[in-house]
Length: 354
Image 1: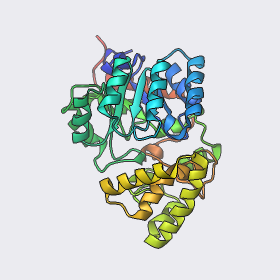
Image 2 (image 1 turned 30 degrees about the vertical axis):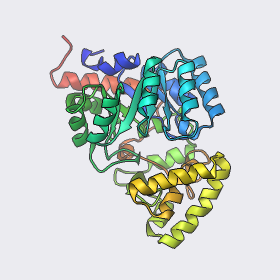
Image 3 (image 1 turned 90 degrees about the vertical axis):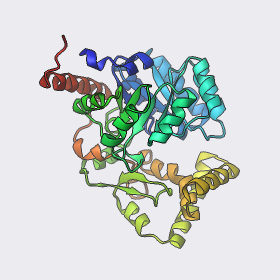
Image 4 (image 1 turned 45 degrees about the horizontal axis):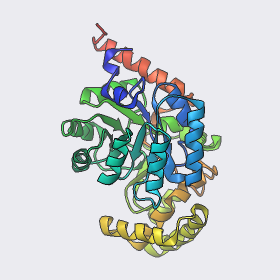
């Protein structure tokens, strides 16, 4: 492998390549994580859409299938976040990633146990804060990414963060091939993280009909909407999303309440916990009550498509790179191709290994 690809991230994660498969809810299960890590990347389990017993089983399944490093994504605001952190430590999981910044206490506990702590961030001030708290690395997600995303493009945000912190930075949002990996390294990053690209693989448990639907989409077929859960969310444009965009506050609240009750039954999350999270979101994001209730049931809308295969009733998170993907290779093929393309790109630029 070209020495430029043997980055600080490889040493930190204990992986062969600087490629991370993100912890996508309902998607990043044991099968996909095992395949990614076995291929030399870092697979991350999505624990946010798993019950605690399901997470226990998923961690043990990955460990039975591979001896390569992998990670677990944890919601730091979950009622049982401490139990999940304890499990990560007990099972010697290599990396703990977070969509929301963990507390300084959790960071210290994980680091003291030898676990790599890597939150996702979308702004310079967030990177500065978590770096000061002692995290080991950050995933920097630009606006091209699927799911919750910010307004700043990766090509602007990534170099800004790389110039701000001195810990390994992983670029996310808009990456799908080896050229992107080289570009991220040129900006100062230590690797890339990919979600949509790994979603569209053979090991992804997303129903075949949903994968086929993704493959029909172009780069202009995603939309950033606040009508799903009140904060900017990049998803595929569908009839449901268009209806949500057109809905007024009364219609939206009625739909949200109906879905929230259903999600509460499925997830088992307590109403006090849902109300507490809603109040926190209202305070921090100035949301309407409709948006707050929608935020509580967003996982159910994602589940309808990603698990149940319901294209009409589900929401499908997607990065803009969906329009550049036209096949469903294996996760190992993705990792191999990215590295081969990166080496070819470095050679084309006259940066052959000495």
